[in-house]
Image (cartoon, rainbow, N blue to C red; front, top):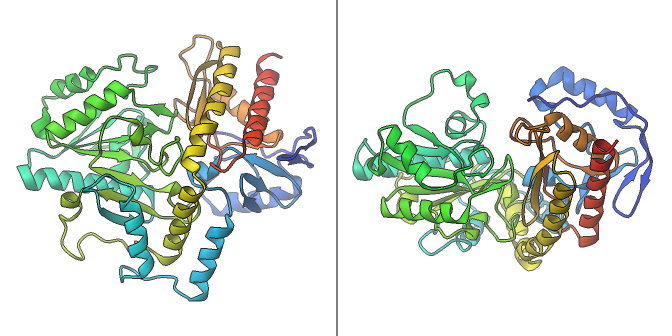
Length: 456
């Protein structure tokens, strides 16, 4: 569903707290000229987020230039894990610009070696190789390529199938959308290529049967077995929820991949770098991946991504045959190094785990208060969601989700557009440096918005 935010300024109640300030109509009347220019020169696809014009972002707040300040629950869509505009990251960028060193193609520079080592050290032994890229889609494309290459080169062309999950989102490029599990995003492809199979994601809602036997049964129904499968790719949590893998399912999946020499790809583009209370979300599960896709929170700022994986898989391509123009570009690398230091020094994974208990309790209480409208409260660490549904308890309610989003925006709490299941999920992702009192204030605002919309 395309989200529709009205560009008609509305009178809203003024807000002035420690973490929120609203002093104008929303959207701001003076901002309409900027929105008009964007509409004239950008594709309409870029107009899906709440109508505010960002001027600066610091810590866990977003500001416009007309005096408004929002408490941020978007983290730029899971990017700003260490917080917005961190001085340490800005300083690292400034030093690189003053050197100056702005681009290198794949000619080596020292920061590239440092970042690759830092990322490898976050992984289990034997996963020492890091391929730096620019976007999450690039990372998943390359992971799929590596998994299929491994299967075909080791066992022959029969072992080439990539298995992925319904509801999955792995990016917007061709291969990433073929592997993705949102059918509405594939109509432009027309003829889907062979060698890809989707199985139901065990979310316990759309797919009530969460047994790993479903995975095996779907393979069998398509005439496939482990000898055909090169790789399995799954998000560590599905971004449309967040929907987390059940522990038993994850354990069985890991064991099946390991015993059948199937490359297990964990997509951590949204879920990595402390977001769920561990450095990577896959660490909640009893499994060990072969390849891990990273992005977004790797730098808390500039575009950079990575595939991290088993040495034997990562080293299959000869020098010069697997590269990217802006791989390890110096500025994003500098930002990522500074970001990783912040995550470690400030124990932001541990902080996300501690505050996750607060967020989880708050969301559970809101879901219990409005069970006819909220089917599920989903959360782990500092990512969460409320699934808004129609009275039947099963049909997503995107209209109410959007109304909640807009009401929170008007009260100084910023979230990105509702996601997943037809746009019915209100998704919550504060920066990991958000203090407890700010998190509690955000929960209070969300509660007020639900009360005003659902009790009147």
